[in-house]
Length: 294
Image (spheres, helix red, strand yellow):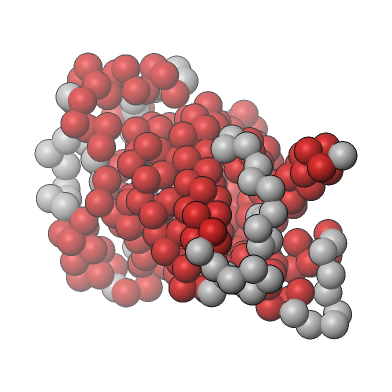
């Protein structure tokens, strides 16, 4: 992420970086979805679920829904990273030169970016959740989407256009929380590290800041992520009326701990995903600025 009033980078850099990270971490995302959609009491562990999927469904099943994940990054992440940088640079225009942008202004940029990104990414997110969860459903209930576009077309045809925005409320809330706790916290952690005599603009700083952002984002977003995943996985007229009903039913029948189901695979996926995303983004942004300033 840029520091200060540095040259803005192209809008799509964030989406591209997140897509690279998604290819690397998709199996862990699939495990997270499987654990979050488990309603039958105590869940298997992350490793056990990973092995079970590979053994019973084949190794390629670990990449079920990859096309939807990439479509999601091309919409959700491209928009939220792009809007975040635009809003942040607008806020910097009225900020005293040489001073760091206050964290609350980063949160404002993150909230706006997350809200817009959540709306744009919702349709692909629904297809993504369903494709990843398909393998653990009874054969008769599997949707068997061929790819992301097929999923979008079939959902529209079979359930109506409005179904593409099922779970929009919790998804947008999660997107706001994720963008603030990931993008804004990365900038915040990076500023803190750079303010010490032990860190400078380097790979070590980028790695450290992104690791801390990954831990923070996973914890903040876990409850909303569980509710969002369960709503998106349900069909029209399913077991949940809305996000509040899903929250109440989950806590009532499974306890508060259910809101953090899949935390370890969430972090195991989001931690590396955050690190790869920001390290790729920092690298291509640095190369872009060098070229622009040469």
